[in-house]
Amino acid sequence: MFSLTIRMMLVLGALFGILYVVVALVGGGTLYANLVIAGIILLIQYLISPYIVQWSMRVRYVSEEEEPELHRIVGELAEKAGIPKPKVGISDIPIANAFAFGRSIRDGRVVVTREIMNMLDRNELTAVLGHEIGHIRNRDMVITTLVSVIPMILYNLYLMFAFGNSENRGSGAALAILFLILYFISNLLVLAVSRIREYLADYTSVTLGNSPEYLASALYKLVYNSARKSEEELATVSNIKAFFLNDPNVAYNEIRELAQLDTNRNFRIDRSELEMLKNARVKISFGERILELMTTHPNMLKRIKKLSEYIG
Image (cartoon, rainbow, N blue to C red):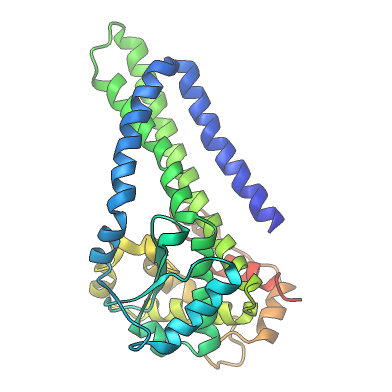
């Protein structure tokens, strides 16, 4: 937890360091004007985002009478986490997944697909739902909204200096290029925040009483499920994969790495297999490391390796 917190602080420090550079270059007035514009856009997004997610993920909220076991698990995890019980829903998309969203801790919603409910056993499903409760308790929705302001400001400044009526076109063009570069860097940093959030939510699931091997096994099954999907099926969720426990588009490559962990070929990662990974060195190719920089989710082998560190 300490190392993850330090990583998060460093990334956030880098993001706000970029913001400081912007203040030094353009002054407070220009920055504040762009901050107000970006703030209004994000406020509108913040207010309507639950409805957008519900529509895009085809969410239907279910009562305790409809899904008593699902409600029971979510309620128990929420009580352990010390947060109000989130709304519980089912997502009608053709791929195994679970996700959380909402404006705040009191507005939390936890959603699963039928496919993941049929695929995981109770311990694995509880570990996955613990991960989603972790997102809510850690206020990840608010953090994501806040850090998204910085790339938006930088892009607005790029447009301003690239196409605005600047008296000094040479300096304006140089600033436009600089802001465009900073925009891409800030986007990479926002993606890094997203990946650290996934690690922190995994850790939270463990602190809520879920053994690491259950979450590792669930993640393995999720990757396997995604790897079996056709290109047409994956295309239907390509624009919403930020709401997935794994990145479906890289699952085919990841499953070849993860299959090596399942030494007894029982389609799950047992505690003994996770303990073996704890003492093993994980080798990630240079290409996969570069690919990871462009995604919202950590490399799955690295993620499960991190889970192995939580074994007592």
